[in-house]
Amino acid sequence: MFGAQAQAKPAHNPNGDLEVPAPGDMDSISSMTFSPTSDFFAVTSWNNSAYVWQYNQQGQTFAKAQNAGTQPVLASAWKNDGSGIFLAGCDKAVRLWDLASNQAVQVAMHDAPVKAVAWCPQMNLLITGSWDKTFRYWDTRSPTPAHTGQLPERVYAMDLREDLLVIGTADRSLHALFVTQPQQIKTLASQLKWQTRCVAVFPDKKGFLVGSIEGRVAVSHLSEQDQKDKNFTFKCHRLETDIYSVNTMSFHNQYGTFVTAGSDGTYNFWDKDSKQRLKAQAKAMYPNGQPAPITCGSFDRTGLIYGYALSYDWSKGYAEYNPTTMKPYIMLHSCKEDEVKPKPKQPTAGRK
Image (cartoon, rainbow, N blue to C red; front, side, top):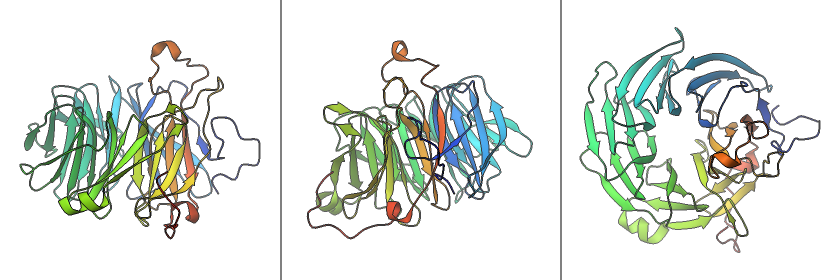
């Protein structure tokens, strides 16, 4: 099984997770998403390329496909039948990569780089969010958008669960809407004081998580009564005075718990309902002693595997980047039940 290596653990893999061999020319990793139908996952990178691997429960991985674009890829989303992957990026376009033919065709276009992409199978719609301050709906058979929604600022984060779409913009506003009612947008002010990095819709669609660069997560609800009674924030991905960005969050489909991962090189499992941390993982480090940022991650369709990527997040600029020692890594973690299953609320538990 994953994580069963007996040899000494390297600094970038202190938890003994399965390391997937990464291509030598891979740059920082922008997204990691799992197929909704089979044991495949996709990784996108700033080197303009996207990759697909197959994995199994015995801890084996197999490189299956690669697709090279012309500019960095920022986001990815699978079709619900697992036949293709939508790739969004700095070329202002979204391409649908058909895995059977290994061909990619353009299916969407914006006026600035596309930061987020989601597929809505209920309506057979592609949804895109861009730095051009719009979100757009697309019938992939048509070159023009089915709907264009104006936003006050650039799209920094987006998540779709069934028919509920949540978008985080550069002004720290959160915009929630049901896909069938794109004109009825509920805009909420963030509970957090600093830039939004990621959002994740609750499994019951009653609210969403917001993660920011200040090492803090907000648990936000849609109804006004729940906002008063249930909204809260908590600190994470911090070490004394060192504060790191929360880069990615994902809910466990079976248990409704969630994982956060950040630029401190750690990923932690949480239960929002009992307001407690279920499990904290050891910190991944580069050979120079700096934390190895986790830039993206997600659960697979079974909830048994959490995949994540370590790569430089450019938070310290070009001058601090050493491509020889700060390589990207792709990791698969085998989730134990006590890491992801809710626990009874502890009487003394407070904010972590």
